[in-house]
Length: 174
Image 1 (cartoon, rainbow, N blue to C red):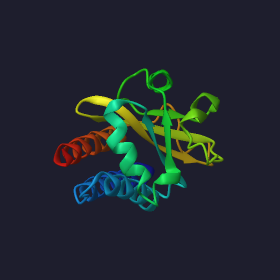
Image 2: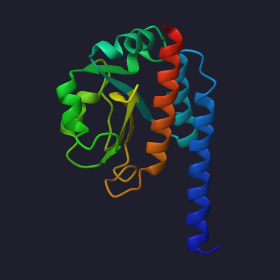
Image 3: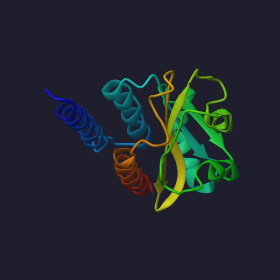
C-alpha cells in the first residue's frame, strides 16, 4: 500500500467514525443523554483523552446547563463562562478552533474543578435555534493531535448535527 492509499484509508476511517457519532446523537431522548453520547463516543471512537463542554451563561442556556448538571457523567465536564469570553475565543463564528501553542487564553474553557494537561485542543462551537451557545472541547497531551492548519469540515458537520438535535430536544421539552 502506498502513502496516498494509506492516507485515504485513514481519512475514510475518520469520516466513518464521525458518521457513527452523528447517527448515535439521533438516539438521544433528552439533553443530558445527547451530550453523554457525544462525549463518550468522541472518547471511544477517536481515543481523545479529554472531552468537556463549555456553555455561555445566558437565558437560552439555562435548560441545557440544568440538564448537564443533572448528569453524573457530565457534571464535572462542564464550564459556564460569560458570553464575552466565549466570543473572544470564537471570533470566526461556528468555525472550530484548533490550537497547539499559546494555550493559556483557552484555559478559561476548562471546568473549574478539572485541569487537563493538554498540549493541543479542538474547540467546536454549537448552536441552539441558530445562536451559538457553547462548545464541546477536545484536548490531547500530544502537541500534534490538533494543529491550526488541519481541516475542520468533519468537526463542523458534527457540530451542525449536534446543534440541530439539541434544538429539537429543547423544542420537545417546551
